[in-house]
Length: 70
Image 1 (cartoon, helix red, strand yellow):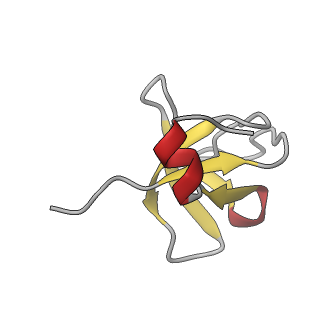
Image 2 (cartoon, helix red, strand yellow; image 1 turned 45 degrees about the vertical axis):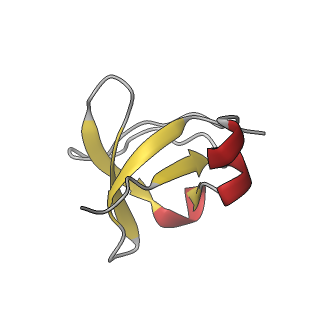
């Protein structure tokens, strides 16, 4: 069983198309698929959608260990 991977939003993004997800800076999202330029994620409300990969970054080991986001 693999460990969940999370991403942190770097910039606000408002969904433009169906299937995209609006995101806000510093929001933490669970990563589902990162094989393309648009990553599939799920937010804290359980809503699944695509976000531009350059608007998020994978959570660092230190952030995971502390449970915080800076």
